[in-house]
Image 1 (cartoon, rainbow, N blue to C red):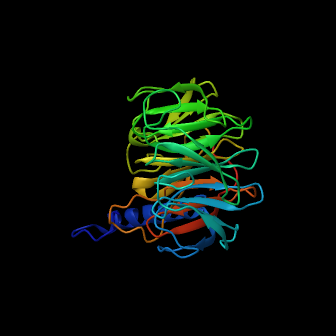
Image 2 (image 1 turned 180 degrees about the vertical axis):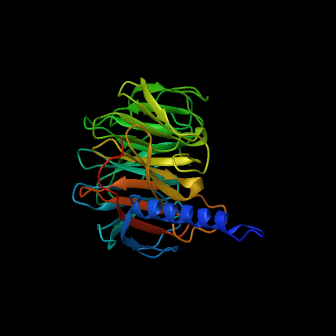
Image 3 (image 1 turned 135 degrees about the horizontal axis):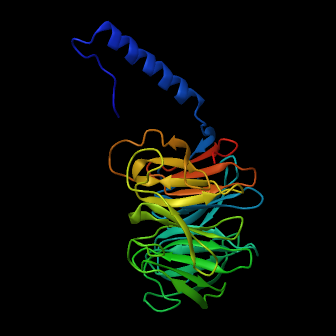
Length: 321
């Protein structure tokens, strides 16, 4: 972070101009839209209310918070205020066990879908944690996976899965039958380079956090590219390993800009609106946040895997477009 300091020999006039500029900058910063922190909970650990590596996050229509704890091999459920409700899962490769759950999605029928990065499969539970089914296996064919990193479900119940090492996006039925797939390793429109989470926007379009291309891509339900936003960097509006995105009813994008350790709010055209930086992220190289999701009241939930915390934020109102 750049710090202001004195410069020997600076003239009084130059100093006056510099201070005037600083005042203007302070005024601009003070009027910039901001996220408001409403709640924060959690810490590193194994007990109820603690976690080992928080990843993807999903919010139910009633406001319950479902989080994938990759390091704990489990799904954790909280109230919207952070009170632990229940949890399930244990490490293993047997039915109902989890290897490295990195994302969670809620289907329109109430089912809970978990993307298992290590076991190359999708496991489906009811909302109390009862195993319903699992499907998928390691491979490059339709319905097979190469490290599923993200999962999302549209209003019709179709399931979308991103493959981190497979560099593609698959569309499947709720039973795992392949419907379509698109993408390949690359940097052009419609290509991916280690994609992370996938999300379905309120209008039914598909957003993919194309992590190592440092951008967000948007597609229609049939895989046709509709746009992309982001360039590599640390400035506002630039991204470094974006791993998740939540899209609101205005088309604004809340991006988990993990290597920059912040959430950025971009308008529907990709222009910068606001940012929120993860507190006490440190300089240990841990990339955070790993998940973002919008609640029914418009609040934004953020999973901070570095500290095992979940933040509930209220985004700025309105749109810059």
